[in-house]
Length: 166
Length: 103
Image (cartoon, rainbow over all chains, first blue to last red; front, top):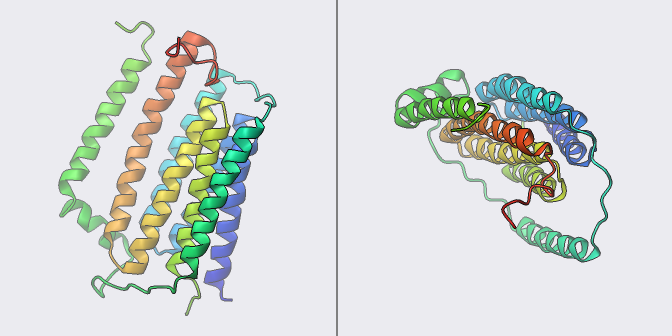
């Protein structure tokens, strides 16, 4: 096992454990902290996939901006830790049944031989340029629309945060 | 450097993360934690897209993941504003207590 594989397993297992911690913790602040860790592990996986630009964006936007927003709102609202709830046995049986069906389905798919599909140009770069160039050529219109969407979201948030909506 | 990892490895991790996010949405009752679980779902989709992009040697997957991150940021801002507005009105973020549309 080389370094690449070892890092993949480390990041993947750490990420899934963080995912369990996010949904299992009673305290929302602890959940948010584990989500930050999960996002950093995901950035590590992006680096392994040679998506360096996305890894940087992941840490900056997600682990930085989005999670700060989450923590800010949690602190603002002063939420108490969740209390223990009763689990309905019918729902639990149904849920595990469906999960079992999907697990069996995954298992049957994994029995199929691996198809190594390598298409596309051979000069597939991993630098910033190869990712950023399509943004300003082929995906110019979606890129501009994303900018508009961010503006709309900003106006919407300002409107939603007003004291009396009229 | 040869690696034993295939596309399947990444897709299975992505699938597990998506399942965890889905479970969080179904199980938890705190609107903020449900929102965090939704972010996990979006990240699982991103991982699948980037893995496809790498193994098919097409850069478009990474561009899509970039758009997903941008839209997730907008979505988080609007969603949290809605949760804050909701808390201001109802003094709770427990989704079991927010049933005024059912009556």
